[in-house]
Image 1 (cartoon, helix red, strand yellow):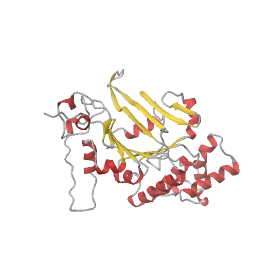
Image 2: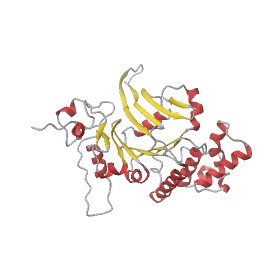
Image 3: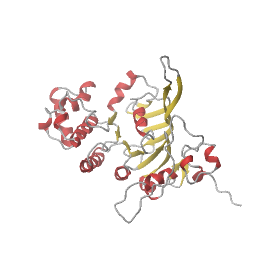
Image 4: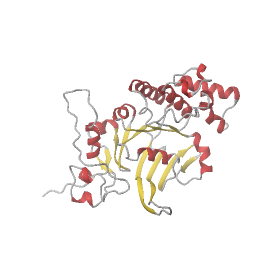
Length: 332
């Protein structure tokens, strides 16, 4: 793994205001969708970002790309012209960097313009950034379509003429046609049929090898994350609670929430019971509990957990935000 990260996210925050009811409504609070998120993505690696619905993983991805303006923190990106803080750049200054940062969206239907042909959809980024025209544009579009498993005769067709899996392949082709430095994938297979998911997953694995892609892979399907990712960052209630190499995380999870996520994964062996033993409800990002956000549900909590929020610290091969894992053991 390279010593210098391609992407460094530092103390990233994204808060949404809450307004009361009435004709002249006043702000009454904040939804803290992302709070103090810190991680690195190194060249050539795929970092998985996982957590249950509402954990803040998609908001984190969109804030990194500046589809949402961050409330605070830094997004340091090692671009071709040097390190820039995406969080501080103006919309105009971001335009040249769009060629280096691309995203594959969750829904392959709504992410494609139904009024544009496939040639127009895949070629649009090249046209917008004046990277190719005419014959060269068509050549690059055809080359990318073939790389994702489609054919040149598909150029004149429209999105409604394709299956869900094919539409997602089109979305992947559009994102890769400019050869970006960083690809963010927001649950790219969750909207597809199970029979099609494996095809798209294998395609992403092949593309990663062929193009040496650097990716941030947002997902809730842990089996997909285990197959595709080098490291995994686990989010709960807008915060990262554990970061570890993939196999270390699956074999020896450190945070109680990570263990709960893994215990809830269905097992093909009917003799192995599933464990849904974590009590309580997911923390409300508009009204987070004091201390560790997971402590009301945690079977290992003690007094400090409700008073002091734990920071990410080294624990074995992982970084974990848990007092039970990072506080020194005091002998009697």
